[in-house]
Each structure stands twice: as C-alpha cells, then as structure tokens.
Length: 299
Image (cartoon, rainbow, N blue to C red; front, top):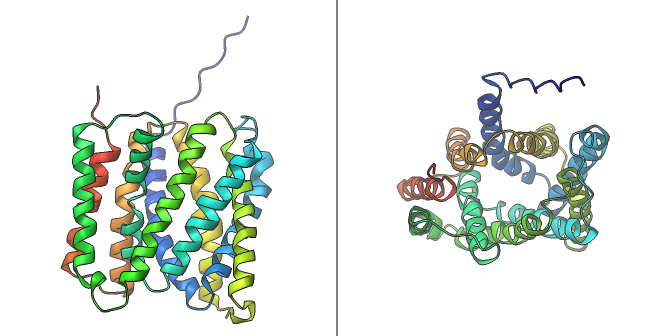
C-alpha cells in the first residue's frame, strides 16, 4: 500500500508576511470608510460594499469549497450572521463614522475581542485567568481616558462615539452564536450568504432612510469602495480563515492589537481628526488590555 505523502511545510516567511498584510489591510479600512462617506450615504455605502464582497465570495465559492468541505450552515445561522455581523454591526459603524475619525473608530471597535472573551465565559462556559481580568480593567480605563479627552468634549463626538460602541456589541452577539452552533459548518458559505443577506438588509434600510440620488461618485470614493469590498472583506477574511486552519489562534491574536495602532497612525498621517494625549494614552491602554486578554501563557 503506497504511503501518503506528508504535507509540504509552509515557506518560512509566508505566515508572518500574511499576518503583516492583514494588519495593514484592516488598519487601513477605517480610513477607506471615511473616504467612501465623503460622497456616499452611510447605509448605501455599506450595502454596496457587502453586495460587491458577497458577489466576489460567490464567484470564488466553487474553488474555496474544494478546501472547505464542511456541510452548509443552517439557514437561521447565516441569516443571524447577515443581520448581526454585517447589516447591524456595519450599519451602525458607517453611520457613526460620519463623525468619528477613523483612528478613534478603530480603537473603540477594538473592544470586540474583549466582548468575545466575556461571551466565552457567560455563554460558552470558558474561564478567565487573572491576567485576562486585568486586561479587561486596563482596556476599560483606556476607553475612559479617550472619552475624558476631546472625544467627550463639545466637538459633537460623544453621541456618535457611544453609538459606535454598539457596533462591536451587536457583532459579538452574532459571532457568539456562530461560535456555539457553527463550528462544524462551512465558513465560506456562512460568509457568502451572510454578506449577501446583510447587503439586502442594508439596501432596504437605505431605501427607507436615504436618497440613492444623493450618492456622489468620485474616483477616490469608488476606489475606496472596491478596496473595502474586494481587499478589505473578501480577500482578507479568506486569508484569515486560511491562516486560522494552519497556525495557532494565539499567533493571529497579534492582528487584534496591532490594527488599531496602525489605524491611529494612518489617521494622524492623512489628517483625519486630531488625536490628543488622552486618545493616545487610551489607545495604549486598550491595546495592552487586549494583549492581556487574547494571549495565553503556554502551559
């Protein structure tokens, strides 16, 4: 009986390179959203993004299903994903980011892994180590510091910033359900169906609240929209799930606390808002807290 050949090892620099690329992509998507919002109403912009991303996923599904051979998710689960992780979460994010600068938005949204750790305790029966509890405290103090600066002042950012914090909460609820009930189902079909359904819901909401004639097309806005859909959504999530199957999740946790720092630096470089000392101190505390929560000591 012929022996089964062992899988070829990955090139040495492939995984670090892909992780670095993910950090750069997800660190830049926040500013790309701001570019889209210069000429596109928020709900229409989000709907167009996920319609395009879902279309790209649909085109790539036959190829991706050769790798991801798990059974399709139940309809209620991908409907939940579309409603929560895409339509609900990103609808809130796009509306809030009309006013909140991209770097600040990235840091506020970075509480998502903290919410997932909390849901693991209350829903999935996981336990928190002492260092993870400390991480929650440090991150909370970081958020308080950000609101203590210009974010909580009279610049009109307090309300939109509080609204933006609802976005990761909605996404965490949806993701917890997927984590609990969708571990044995196809992530490719989950994302494709969820994106397309989310785009449909966003388009319906946009039709009720926004005038499609208000969309002002420009080269920069169109390029940002395509970048968000193809690179920032379809390609990046495909890369992330490919890595997740091959490297420890703790190694991928690097993305969680590098992305908001890169987003803040990019916002400073392009002049998207003004980050005061409270914002930078808060960013450092949030990132440090996330690092404590999402990384684990080796047993």
